[in-house]
Length: 245
Ligand SMILES: Nc1ncnc2c1ncn2[C@@H]1O[C@H](COP(=O)(O)OP(=O)(O)O)[C@@H](O)[C@H]1O
Ligand SMILES: [Mg+2]
Image (cartoon, rainbow, N blue to C red):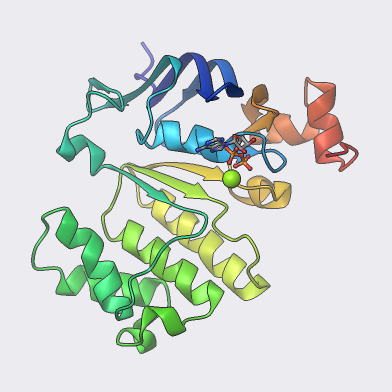
């Protein structure tokens, strides 16, 4: 028998007002994979990520997270279960306080104590130990994104959801953040879901890739199949950059 999937989405339809923004008949996310979600702007990537983060309940259908043999939904999740799922938003809001205080904040709202050591470790990991006392609002875009990632990583989430974590960043920060994601994943019992409009990033990081177009899940396949032998012509067009959007 195979292990229960981390996520099981069935008959998802999500609407905002009269706008139908997401239609996904079925999607499973297996434990321990790095799923890359790609697609043009407006395709519904962030919406899907919010459903997976259990921040919203789908208008129709079910989005279930299987955590330690328990089936969890946005409605049923306990505080303890919510803590295992952490999302880094595309434009993370940092407090007008020190870098260290920003990272401590996430631990504090989750009721964790004695956090000096894990914060020092994560500061080092994201190469921000020299900026621990700096006001987070004085940081560059790349540094700020690393603070947001550190704030997530220090919680050691079982599911890490990343929305365009390197959009508009320079190559140094892109490489650093990608290697942090890989290190986190290599650390063991975590599932990572990464939204990116950069297919090369998906190719570098993801074990499986899903393409969203206009709210529709066009194809979800192991990364090598997705890039080398896509089954849908729209996937092929998206990969080769021929898709006009
Ligand atoms: N809270 C909301 N209210 C109304 N429309 C929304 C909301 N969030 C997203 N949308 C719409 O849903 C569609 C998908 O958006 P989004 O998931 O942000 O796409 P992506 O992340 O792929 O760019 C877009 O047309 C967007 O305008
Ligand atoms: Mg988005």
